[in-house]
Image (cartoon, rainbow, N blue to C red; front, side):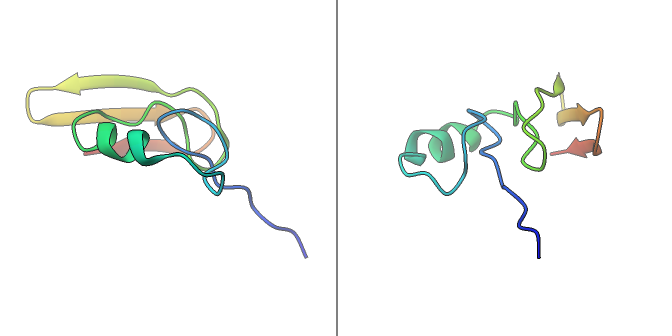
Length: 63
């Protein structure tokens, strides 16, 4: 059985590690910077109607 690591999409550290309250607060106003699935830095574009973030492994997210 394999377990999948989940990463914080703002700081890139393990999501199950404590101390992500600042990350959660910042994510209310900012787009993600890291892919939660693979920890890669994403290409982020802020748009007038939201944001688009692209991970080379997992594709595009919009918000």
